Figure 1 (cartoon, rainbow, N blue to C red):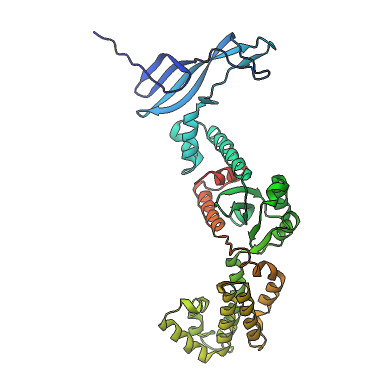
Figure 2: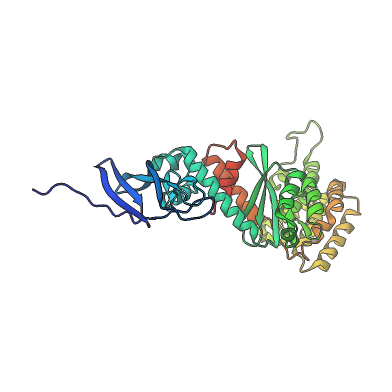
Length: 397
């Protein structure tokens, strides 16, 4: 009667199977050796054929038919013929305690699930998977930073809700995360730019950020040659604050009135934020009726529309014309609530008006990245380590 035997082909280059040690329904263990006859000395690089001894090392491999696979590698300790140094051999098919192909699978799984889940799925430790993720993310980040970055996007996101922030830097042309620097200070951004070197910084032509004074200081110090542009979303939010202040003042009723505010004005708070070209006939009629009762709302809405036209204009000249029309409305004195908006614009006018000349850049890609980072933070039930958060954020999606 024939014996119950099995033969195994691992499909690993320069690896020879000696025997199957365990062939059970719950696991498979195989003893292997390297077929490289003369490993090179790590010091002098000389091939050596003198084997001092062998020590068996356990290497995890990909599962086969749902069974975990363990490779028992007879790892040699060699003696160099030139420098007489003793060293243990390495093999390109192995990454520490796992095979290179299992390491790739672990990193791929960590892109779509928590590290702990990927570790349990393959029966390895959390520390092993996390070390592979951090190492791979470092290689990816180095590769991305070596390439030229023409448009640099800068923004912050939180590693923990409402505190412990990181500065996220994204290549505006490719949408790839370049780095996630701890903190959101001027020093944090300046240190990263200094580490990139003068040549890389000279390749940056446009920088897009929010209205952070800390980022502005770092950009002026390290990227003074580039056009610094404020993100359109943040600027429009500043502009809209003036209309909100007017609407809140208009909707108030005399003390003792019930309700204390005009319900029609309050219900129109979202409609008032819409641009004129985004309204249908019914909405235009509703606003016309509201403006007839409250002329100050009309002036505020027209002023916000002209500020919108800064970005809707075809060129820089058209933006300046829209700004002149806003100045005419503001000079009437009907909307003093826009004073803060005017002060903010004066402080950032160069970064706002350069938007057309810089090619109309946007922080949309980095906002998408920040949304994905917050999903990642929730999936992982939070992060406490900056390096781990950066590694997970840099992994390609």
